[in-house]
Length: 141
Image: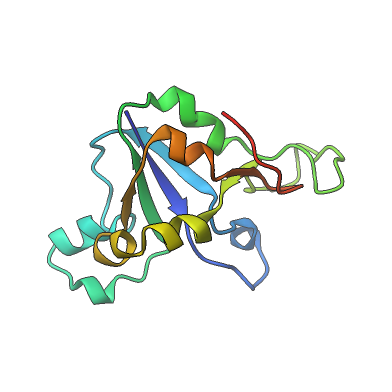
């Protein structure tokens, strides 16, 4: 079973961190993984903090019954730029090849995001929201 740590913020400043985009999967862990309080709103609240003070740029998406190795492709670094040209190995790049349509997921699960910072969905539902970053086409994993 798997859980995804997904980046949620737009970065308008320069630097490597600006290459993270909303919907990029930062990490994939097994179901029931204990996320840190800087990664999970639930962990933030469980450690004694007020939910309204949560300001970290992540949401946890839980996909019960799915093996981690099936979703590892969501963390693969992009190897070509937006023109389809190969990115040199020496070029610092944190961008992913794929991302999730986060605005649509949030639109469909607004209370889950507000209350816990987590969404639980099926693999079938998740697959509807996976896109290739460079051309925004849907990808089936």
